[in-house]
Image 1 (tube, rainbow, N blue to C red):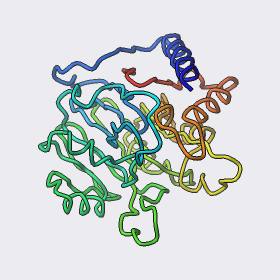
Image 2: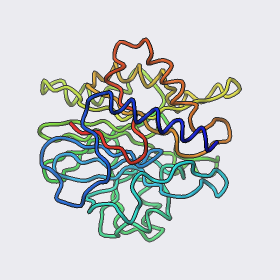
Image 3: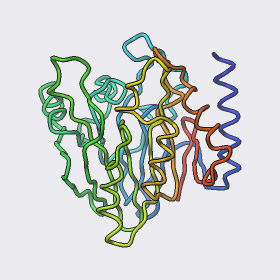
Image 4: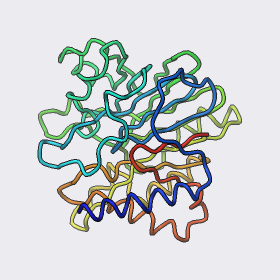
Length: 292
């Protein structure tokens, strides 16, 4: 596996540099630029978004393993103690790969954590008083940045007895000059793109960046796509969203019981070979940054 990991890292860096877009390494701690957008891939669903003069961290998980069994195959692109000052943390749902209590406890407790209402209640009960609710249809303001929420096609519970935490969100981050969609985990439906269409199109705006998860399931897991995007589903949603660029995530970070950490990105690369918009799909290794 170590050789496979190094091979993937080398090829992805080459693709990113050839794309001709602005890439950079470490994130600096200076004030966030009021214009443009920067996305740094930390790993899995954890990304550092800099948009509208604000820094937002998504679905924090810096753990060395999931459930102490599924080890991490690449270190976080930015160490948790090297993060710049944050303005908010966005949580989409309560699955452990998207919400690590260990990571959350390490982050400054003064940074607000926005999560679906039932997840916010759970976090508050666990002592995270900075947790605030954002439910489907809600919009909150952070200076010039507006964050809209809608329901994802995904269930955040694992068992029958914990259905109370099944809520899962997707988010649209809208600044005066840029807009970014973060899907968390979701299946593809006829309405997955609806929030972007409803909010941006009447203002004659186009989505600048789609951040979409990619997954890979074996043939014996046919229900996987009910709550997850395959690599081909992500490309379909990219087109429906009408976004300028796509950054795939949810790959190259952890081992999984039913798929390898690079299966999804390998499938995506194969699909992109003949795809008309392959130059607009930006594959980032952990620690890489894409900027507009």
